[in-house]
Figure 1 (cartoon, rainbow, N blue to C red):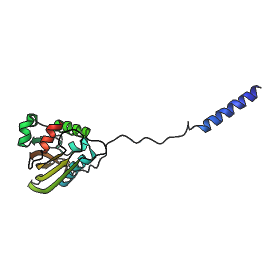
Figure 2 (tube, rainbow, N blue to C red; figure 1 turned 180 degrees about the vertical axis):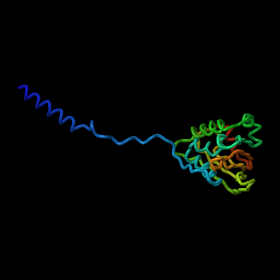
Figure 3 (tube, rainbow, N blue to C red; figure 1 turned 90 degrees about the vertical axis):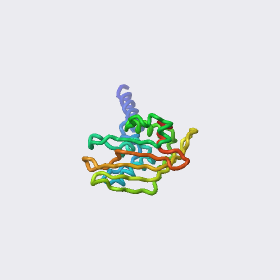
Figure 4 (cartoon, one colour; figure 1 turned 60 degrees about the vertical axis):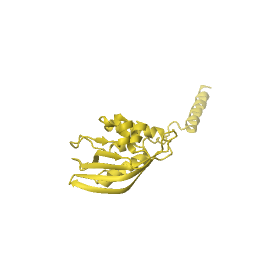
Length: 195
């Protein structure tokens, strides 16, 4: 009787193990990471493309990577807001830095539904060289932020970026001047609203 019980027990174990996938490898889960179209900024135009893609991808890490890194170049980031924004949001004129850029951009991303793209459109772009390792980029911009709050969704103006090539031969923005150029609020005002 004991041998018969052991055989039945072993058969039950064999069927149970074959019936479930206890020892079968499962497909790994995909990591939860932000979408990224970031390219090494070896040319000034790539910095601008990365900036536009950071809006599309809603990726604050790539957004901040467009700006100067003091580890690789002896320049501090400086932001000069539009005059309208400076009078309304005084904190924009008080040592605004990359931590502030990150904070406003993360706040902005949090307001936009996941499947709705933010867009930055640039026009009338021009590059003018200051020296071999520095240049000025200027453009008109239009930004659409499809959020659900009562704040404006569209922003426009003119920007000037002073860019520099660092010790890695990467280009980045170290100075930003924003100017309001229409009845729409400027990018500076957007920063003030979403900070």
